[in-house]
Image (cartoon, rainbow, N blue to C red):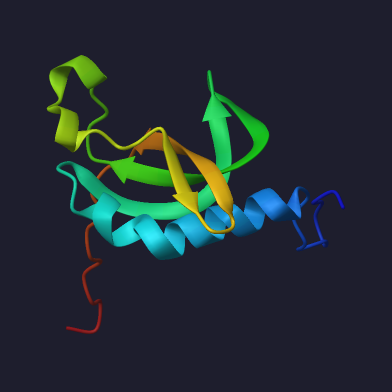
Amino acid sequence: MNETKGNPLPDRPDEFRAARAAARDHTNAVLRLPNVIGCGVARRVVGGSETTEWCLVAFVSQKLPPAMLAADAIVPRELTTPEGTIRTDVVERKMPRPLLDANQ
């Protein structure tokens, strides 16, 4: 089934389930990596274009080339769960800041 506006069901449901399982099983470990500020499930982006592939996205405060990172500080390219193996995507995002309470 294709995902369109008004249709919340994703296409590639097996891959989507595997990505959700990867988020469930691996988020805590990924969040412990230096520079990682969040995780989520989304479509993989390659060369600035969204693909149809579901993945676990690791949000980092600064995206660095793997050569500049220690081996144990790199987000794995793939994560395996009983539901399947899913690729990861690393996306640079600024660290979220809490909003000021306008009522104070």
